Each structure stands twice: as C-alpha cells, then as structure tokens.
Length: 120
Image (cartoon, rainbow, N blue to C red; front, side):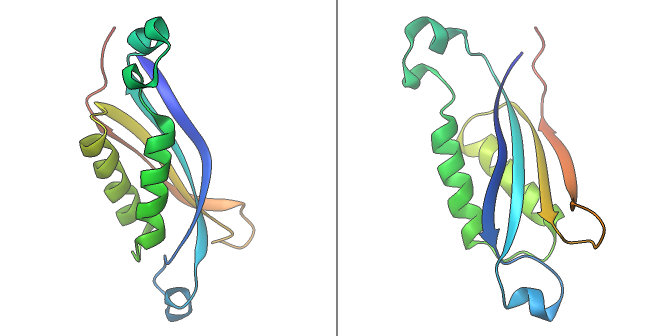
C-alpha cells in the first residue's frame, strides 16, 4: 500500500461549543494520509493517473471553511466521508487538531482511520 499525504493543512472555520467560539473563526490543522496505488501515475507521469492531492486539498479547504460544527469529532468524520466518497480513496487516516484549544498544550484533536486498508 502506498500513501499520499497532506500535512499541516491550516484552515479557518467556525468550530467550538462556547458562544464566543460561534462568533469567531478559529484555525484547525489537518493531516491526511490516503491509501493509493501510485504505480500507474509513476509510470505515465500524468496527474490523471494519480491521486490528485491538490484537488483533494482544495475541496477539503472549501468544505471546512464553509462548515460550522461544534465538535472536532464531527468535522473529522465529515471530512473523512467526503474524501472517501468523492475521491474513491479506500482508506485514510486523518488527524484534526485545534491549536491553542487547551492552555498549556500546543493543540488538541482527534485521529481517525476510515475505510478498508489495502493489503500488498
């Protein structure tokens, strides 16, 4: 299994449970690992034969910017569903964090895996 990844993608969104959080935009950070077979793209050297991380990144940014979830858990689940369904990714690992959400820590968040991990 090969992995295509996006690391530390920062997006501003409305996220949080407190009234003050509903009135501002906060930055979330996303790490995404996606199962892919890169051999066809490597052989042809053409983006049509590869998992297009730029297209995925643009779609994820637009989705997160337009969302207004209360929980990082909900946002992570929705982003995972989007990538799995819209980009035919069989498996992904997603880390979503809210920098500065807990005093004394760099960030807090969730790490989830969804889909079927390919073998081989």
